Amino acid sequence: MLTDRFGLTLTTSLPDARDAYVKGIDHILAATFGASVAFSAAVAADPGFALGHVGLARARMYDGDMPGAQKAIASARSFASGLTEREESHLAVFDLLLQGRVSEARGAVQEHTANHPRDVLVAQICTNIFGLIGMSGEPGRESTQLAYTTKLFDALGADWWIMSVHGQALCEVGRLDEAMSMMDRSLALNNANANASHFKAHTLYEQGSGEAGRAYLADWISDYDTRSLLHGHLSWHRALWALEQEDEAELWAIYDGAIAPTVSYSLPINVLTDAAALLYRSEIAGLKVPPERWRDLSEYASQFFPNPGMSFADIHSALAHAMAGDGERLAVLTETQSGFAADLVRPVAQAWRAIARQDWTAALQHLTPVMADHARLGGSRAQRDLLELTYLNLLLRSGHAPEAHRTAIARRPIFSQSAPIAGFA
Image (tube, rainbow, N blue to C red):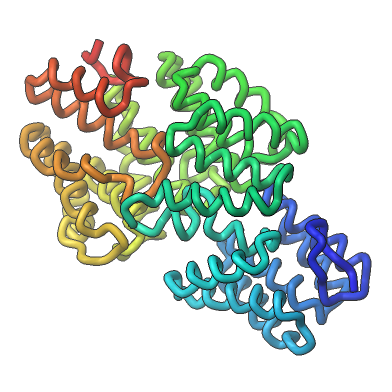
């Protein structure tokens, strides 16, 4: 039998199928465009190649094509006879994932990777910000993710993919020098790895290196296909640095060209959260955001996240609805009981409602308890700075400027000298 580039046996005897499969895996690991095409070529070369169909299912998930993903996983099940134990377990993990049995899928991933740590398509399900650990809603999820990627790193060593996701986990717990070293090593092996360029941007952000980060991403993204998974989110990072450096023209050019719902190729959760965070961070920085931008985003949120349950998306939907003046949609989220962190979604949504009414004191009362452990909501530190900066802004608006500065020093030192908030300096 043939093997993949990690030395794992594949139940196909056709080199063309194997080669296309390996190419598809690398597209997913690097977040580059072309995974669906590659996996389609793999199963065209060998229609009975079960893991090729699994890979196609995963690629179609990233394409936002859930019916296509279900069709592909059904094809994989139909060709499951004769698989190795590792391949059967691999298929079972994705079967659970596509059934929406998230908790069981996470357990299955961890069991599978304990036995097959080099099976990267399964392993990556629990890595990254929006993986099953990152979106678990559990306290201490950042440390849990670091422990998970550490085990993978021990098994995979000098591999460009594991170095990028392990570096991300290091970044999120504040081990920035180690994170940057991982990113640079990963990019030296594969400069096309968008995960590494993304997490390098995060590390530069956490280091307060805005000018360097802005220049780096402007150069790197020029060769990155706009249809790729992370293009919109990397553009968000660029726009945040443009905002920080008071380049309003570039901010809106990037938003309109790569982030807005009508132009982004990102997954809906990225489109919603990136757009909402950028618009509101622009407002508290003192920029005027046209009302139609909020109305468009509110409509997008209601289309793709009509019911509560994805807590990180829910707080951004609530923001869009509040700023668009859609009280009916907002009310659903202020009372939600659904989602992995619904107890935090409710007060955040209530805070957005008070902010829309310019009731700064009420908003501060709603948001304050959330600040103790908002990591449970999901997202990276950079993404949750939406809440950190909102909290600082509410302190300022409520007449507590000294406390705002003390809070910045204690909670987010990168903002202690200068924060993108009107009147903070």
